[in-house]
Image 1: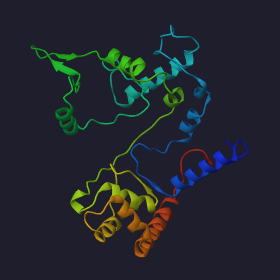
Image 2: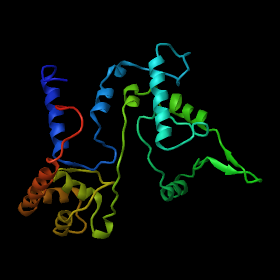
Image 3: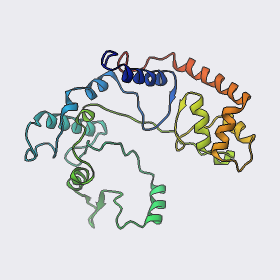
Image 4: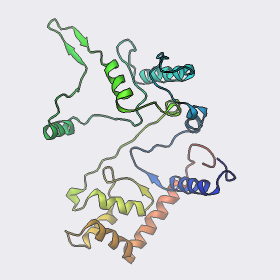
Length: 254
């Protein structure tokens, strides 16, 4: 996209670009992608829509290159994790990553919701000690399509992604992630209340209020306190000076 296409949209994208270049992005679901990934996402693959999995041309034809791409992505995914394609399958279509399983949280949720079935492993051993592998690939594929979603984002399959996670419990500090999130946002640090990194300023604002103060009262105190705003400006300047030293991967302008 250039400025001549749509000045308003171009301007909004430029503002987001500046925020990413001069802020710390700590959201686990956000990633800095390479130029190659951005080019793949903005390629002619965006024009395509597909149904079925590779080789299932009975939905409609013209998907030979989509099939080739998806097969390549599956092979690379198995190679990345050192998995044998004879024993493992992979579905690269889900729109969002699932990440690791927190089994303690899984147990807590199971006690809360009482599901009829939980699939938490795919391996067992028979009476003779021989390992048995369950074939769940077909069921998982059917759950993704047509069960949970329609056609995949073919351009996203061509790209790639990674994630990161920092989890800090602030309850023993007399505050919580919701308040730390607002302070960090003011300091050019993006996060959310599930994955936020606490700083002393959060505790200072919290300490100036009644212990039962609401989040809105906390935000008002942060915005209206002269000393707090001075600290915010100092921290923000430090963050922007640090992040500004590093080039941002991707396209030069967008």
